[in-house]
Length: 436
Image (cartoon, rainbow, N blue to C red):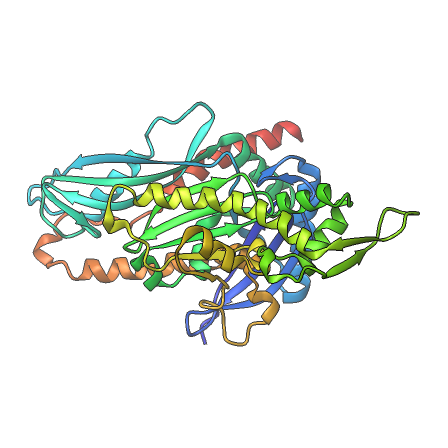
């Protein structure tokens, strides 16, 4: 039996660092071989703020996953998020130069490469340039132009960019932890891979990934990513509100949120009280659960009013942008009680909680299927998704008549990784050599 390769996803979050070691089984599902989790102390709102602490968290999570799996890992796929991430729309085109006017994979690659030359703000680098749809001459809304005839190939791109310094800090931490950074992926895209179904992406859906420091949003329609956004509030802001409103230390406020927190005050009885420990040497405190829920409600409402505005702004110009599949909530913050009901009330559309069960092997541990590991599992799935895309691309090329294949084909390349990492990792290696 053919030995299946192992892949590793590394999710460096604000509250936790998680390592997922997985292997694709014979049914195309991901078998989790090892899961390692460590508390993040050197990351603030998705951005490295202390390299030493971040490296320690990475090492701890990796060692735990290696011990459980029995495998020593080297290559990893890492996720990136944070307030420094921004997105924009860009239109670009190339002319078809071959004599027969047949669009080749190399023409599509040339167009993608050209999109990466878009001038960004000082200190920014393009992470992804994702084609949304193509236009050939006057024919619009083409998903796959390879093999078609035309003189001009045009595409609308969704550009995702980030600060070079933030990206490089992650790269340095990964390298100093003794790992090889194989690829980088925007975290909401990884989460989407693990929790969304193809039917949802086709029908139109908003993924909302609620992390510790930020809430990431990704809108899909027609099977294509249409819009992304980073909201600078996450689960930590809820904990902070409880900490200040109830005069508690952070650890107690977090415990209170997880055990008794609810996003819907109407679901809590007016006389429900919980007793929590006070500061050392001080008496215990009694907290009204309805009062607690009221603070949570106000904070969550703030986040999802921004989410609602993002959705409305996306759909405001075209009725065809209606998101039939509604909203899918994932990430650690999605586990808050009655959050689904509150989001449905605020946004007025269907909501479900996204768990990464769709692409996991049937015997996966229930704890692994938690929404808080959606990003890590999506990152571990990343190499398998690339292989599937490559197979589909080969199948489509085989459908092109032989007489149209006189020019040399080239293998499609992922410019989003290749260009960024050749440039980024070369600079990072030089930096590390100077430090050492």
